[in-house]
Length: 192
Image 1 (cartoon, one colour):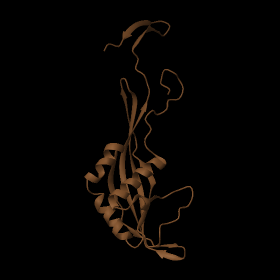
Image 2 (tube, one colour; image 1 turned 60 degrees about the horizontal axis):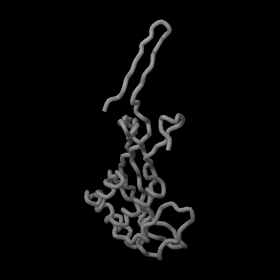
Image 3 (cartoon, helix red, strand yellow; image 1 turned 180 degrees about the vertical axis):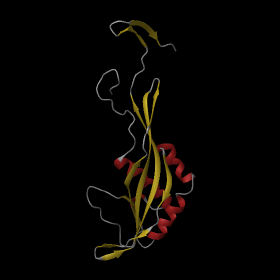
Image 4 (cartoon, one colour; image 1 turned 90 degrees about the vertical axis):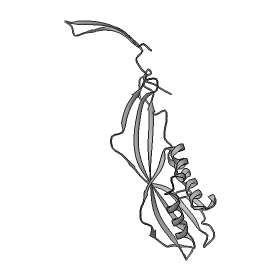
């Protein structure tokens, strides 16, 4: 890991949870709040197409579909830690509920997410909290020449991301500053 003493590009030493790991967090949440077995709450995007559960089974596909950053993240220097960049972002999580009880599963998720206690784990462990949801959209889908009941709803979450860059403090400095005609000597040491 590099720091400001090495020169060159500094990288974030505390990267946020993203990509598949972030989608997995939302799968776990929606499995819990809908009461659906984790085998029936699936990632929206997979490298290989998945075989859907049995026809009529109630299940859900979950995935982050949109990320919106708030403008102008805060930058703060913290002695002994480095430069902290704090940003807020909104994550749109599209949930597609399928099956004979798709609407019931969507309603259960929509009501359950409003309960603060159901958000505590996400907030404590990932800095993510529910913000709001859009209107549900009924969108039946043709699968294997049969129409499957499907309802989509986008749930929006907010999270704070804290990135840390290892910029070291100046502990002491001595030297002379000169413009050719005037010279100023200094001897500064940081005292704890």
